[in-house]
Length: 188
Image (cartoon, rainbow, N blue to C red; front, side, top):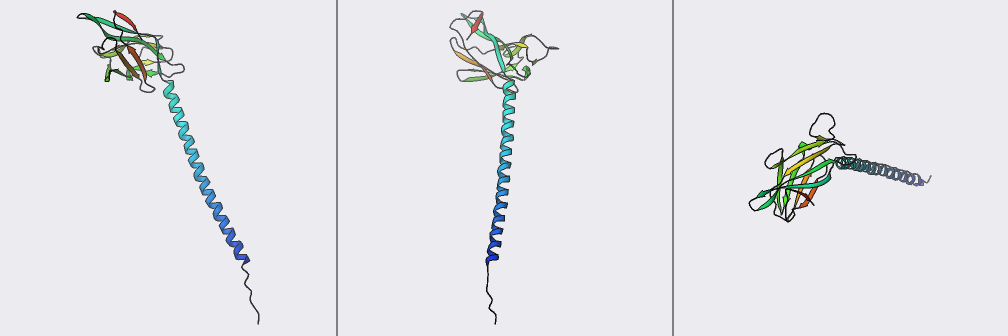
């Protein structure tokens, strides 16, 4: 009679090969997921940088002084409007001035100032270096003189006028009404 011997060496090698293949497959799937997440994050970061640089490049800047115009009211002079010149920052893109939001803030009170409202609004008073036909588009190299009617702030009080283009950063102008006013004043 013959005796049968069981040798399980081959089964152990086969089991090790199956486990190795499983580890390789899991590692491949994991690396695919990690790489995909990395590519997605890189794409989002690139989009944010491009959007940020576009908004920063279309910002306004004040050129020169801010002038306050005052008129006589009963016994004293009161500030009625401010006037200043704006232009694009270096390398900036064109800005549609008529789409700009202008707000006034003084002592916790905030008010939206309407475009081309003759009694309590703001408007483009003069343009310089106009490129092509005159329009409301502030292009690089052009300068617009804006006049903003302000609600009457108290003398020696601080107020702010914020310029918010349709695309770009808010440009705050923080000023103080001097203790005494002349017809035209340089505001700081």
